Image (cartoon, rainbow, N blue to C red):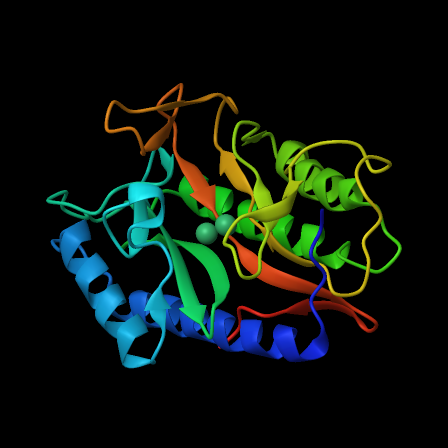
Length: 248
Ligand code: MG
Ligand code: MG
């Protein structure tokens, strides 16, 4: 069942979304070669707490940190640790926050220093695919229109859209119905109603869409070892069209 949110609830979720967006803005200022992913995670956690919010990922299903930090061929769910961020890396940072019992969820991929043109293009296309999906988050549309729009942008560019992980409804729980695939046909899925809030999050691979999970039980990597990018926004379906809640 899709839990619709009223205007008041959407405003609470906007506050949670603002915290994640401001956190990701902060990351763009501090991320640099030589720092470890654990150092970056500590800064993220301190920032979220300084905003009066609760880190949404910490202890979520046992996840040990406040951010998922995934480098290059790591798609999502990378666990912060001793890994050093290097010049030329693509670093995907996914952050959740809880404000007044509601979740915000957003992710960005950062180019650290000078990255290859192919990596840059992968980032740009992934972000474009997110925007294309968001544009379909409109009252009366089918959910599949979001999925198909994301897929088209990514595949027209020759990239692979991850199938095994999807976006999701969000609210008092981080993962609510419906699932929001980044692939599919426009006539599929439920009709979007006002008050639906979705975390739309394309994960786009430079090569094959196939992924696998590392033995740590969390980190998802591309099957072919090529890089991946990930952008995510929390978006409400309103009378006036899509409303991105995870903006600063
Ligand atoms: Mg996320
Ligand atoms: Mg999400």
